[in-house]
Image (tube, rainbow, N blue to C red; front, side):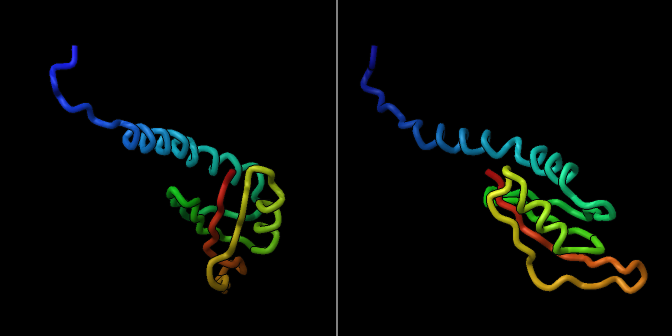
Length: 103
């Protein structure tokens, strides 16, 4: 029986928990996608996952091939390079940061 205690509205809390659960698998999904799609000779230096997407620091001899390979995947909504790639004189690879939004 209700004894006059105010009932709390848990809808907001439930929505927050559900949103976290949806993004909870994103790091694994992103790593799996990168492992499958990155062109040979491309390497991941860092991955940062947030609610808005995935930031990936990549080293590759062909940045455009990386963007094309990821952009052609059905799990990727959008992929962009942030800033200009910088060439490593020692390796001939380009270092760049890109952002991905997954479905």
